Image (cartoon, rainbow, N blue to C red; front, side, top):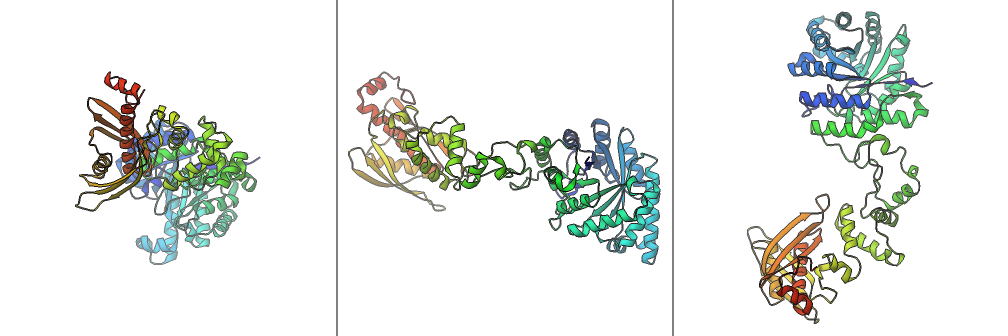
Length: 546
């Protein structure tokens, strides 16, 4: 049977110590409840001596959040221990965590008053640790001791203080790589030496606490588990001091996916990993990088055609775990310039489009043309692409004919063949347009305006030899991202009637021009179509020519 691993979450204590990551008390309580849903074993809720807000957060979590053990941190001073013990006093399942620095670097910088020699200082540090542990036991029988900067601590002294802490009554001994200095092999050896020096190692839970200064926090933590640690200290999204801590989601999924390598198990409900990550990100204001393992937005995304083909046929070709198992969306085929046919047509099929074989090449080419202009192609983009594909009659019925070709089934009166816009600071935009008429003639005109859209519309009016009154202009994004397609709707008045044009493009100036041409084509069609003209006279032509 696999050994259980205690998941000790310190997001609300060490994680919050990251510059700019401070959280309000309600945010801390909300995150603690989410950590309880995640089913972590221990929540380190704060450092009570540091502020009244820290004390209140610890007290509220201890009394309001059911499930995990609530832990409070304290240095090895009497005031710290009392502050932590009192903050936990009304909780039903609590732990007090006390620590002191043990490396020569820290001792030399922090403890001048403890003695003249290193030997004297080390002895005083052991006495402080023992005294603090015994004081902590008056508040709770669940006491953890940490040897700060254990990764750089003299090995003999580390064993000495660990033995003293165990004899004093600490039930968990934490061996932190506080500065992220260790490599995985070194850290495993370090924990192995601690196990060897404990008189009764089975009576103690050995813990890891690794920082990510060299990008090795998760690797070191896993090495510690293989060396005998049965508690791991970690944070959501790996937030924390400097480069952060070992990431909870990475550790949990590594232990789960590679159970064959570790033979341990956690009680974590992995489906809550991504929602918890998102909540912590929102509370701290620290965005999760897209390529972040497990919880990043790209962690289960596939854009390359080879990958999409493989995943669609058999998920495990490129995924070693299920997106749904960690709370991510199961379908994450991302469409872009590297996507292949399988990814595109699978998405179109999911959207309800049946594409005949005869049209697949053209549809795929249209998709590639769009993907060359956008970093990512979204469902709204695909729907627009499919709406503009097909006969003019079909497109016109939806009011979205390609390039503004609203013709009510005939040849469009105008087609925009070229558009050039020059914008210079403190000067009016200059525009050149080339318009082809239905009689085959081509007009090229230039104009300026207060803005590029006004200049475009003036140039188009010159090209059709007629001014028009613009009644309304509206622009909105129809997909995601800075390169989203913009949809433009324009209302043009001619006489007593209005004609509405629509167009979409990643270039909103081009979309504005196409929408204007679309409206003028509707006007021209109404003039030449007797039935439509009659509708106009009766004042019942609608915006979409219905």
